[in-house]
Image (cartoon, rainbow, N blue to C red):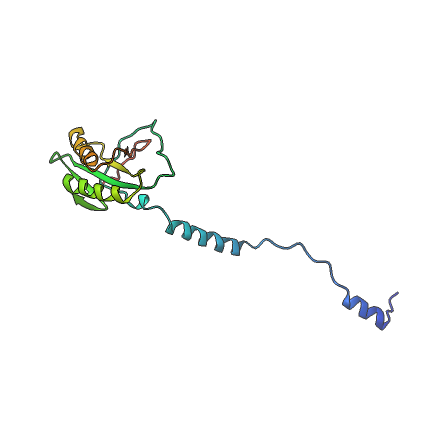
Length: 160
C-alpha cells in the first residue's frame, strides 16, 4: 500500500479535515464589557451626582429605602458650621435661603405630579431648630412629602 494512484492522492487532498473545537475569544468580550460599563456610568442618576461632601449624614441602621418608582424630587442639603453655629441650605450646589427655597418648591411642585417630594440631606451636627426651619419652608411650598437621607453605618471622614 505504499504506492497510491493519482486519484487516491487527489481524494486524500480534497478530504476535509475534522474541525477543532472553537476557542473562547476573551478580547471581544472585554471590549463589550467596557462599552457597557461606560454606558451605565454615563446614565447614572443625578442623585448620585448631587452629593455634597460637606454634609455628614446621620446614621440610621434600621432605615428603609423610599419607594423606588417615584423620581420626582428635589434634593436639599443642610450644612452646619460647628464653629459659627450657623447653618446653610444648598440646592443644586448653590446656597439659598428659606424664602428662595419655598419659592423654588412652589414652582417645581406646580410643574410636577402629585408624587413630588423633597429629600433633605441634613448634616448630623445640624441643630434641630435649623432643620425645622427648612421643613417649614418645604411645607410653605406646598409639599407634604419629605424624606430624610441617612446612612446605615458610620463613614469616616478622611483626615486633612
